[in-house]
Image 1: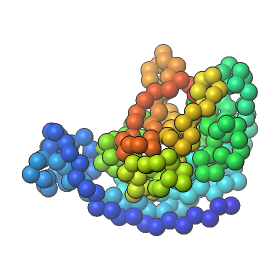
Image 2 (image 1 turned 135 degrees about the vertical axis):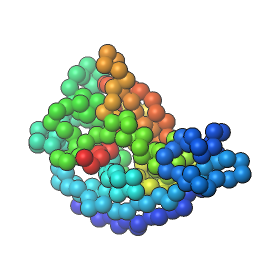
Image 3 (image 1 turned 60 degrees about the vertical axis):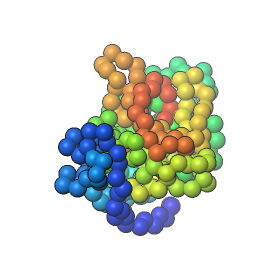
Length: 250
């Protein structure tokens, strides 16, 4: 069982330039009575404290409680089972991966040494399965819940730096503006494409949402962080892709 020590964070955020000023901010966590001469918003304190953690499939996940009322896992999911104990298949063969219409997982490059700290890569059929890939009382966040997180951290232009683990032990240099002020501790676990090949290890991390692009689409909204930017990007990926998962408390 992994022992994790957290340090409570309460960080006064720097200003974030907004063309429209604080009367119509792009983020919700701001001080409407305080603005710089150029009209840029001054954001309020971010609070990030250790949660109680959660044990799932034999692993003790650390959690963080943010001042916006959310509690997130602070590591990527590693489970091989759904919440009811049913197994999730490990699919290593590329041909099998691209033909899947049910849940599956893999390690990056099918190498179990990548389990820590990157976790597993799951296709979206795992996310949509009614048996729940997260522990009971937790869920895969929808697109709005991801937005609530990034808004709280000062909007997408700067939130990524506050979500990335620091240094270049895992991230490629320069790991731009990485402070991990949120405690999210995002790792660059890469992803698995719909044809089964792997990309991006060390360069970016991608996390599923539970929100489909539209009801007729085969695509789903994903958040990702990248080594050379502080931005949190919001894009959509095919359901057969493999991405990391973070769980959010109900």
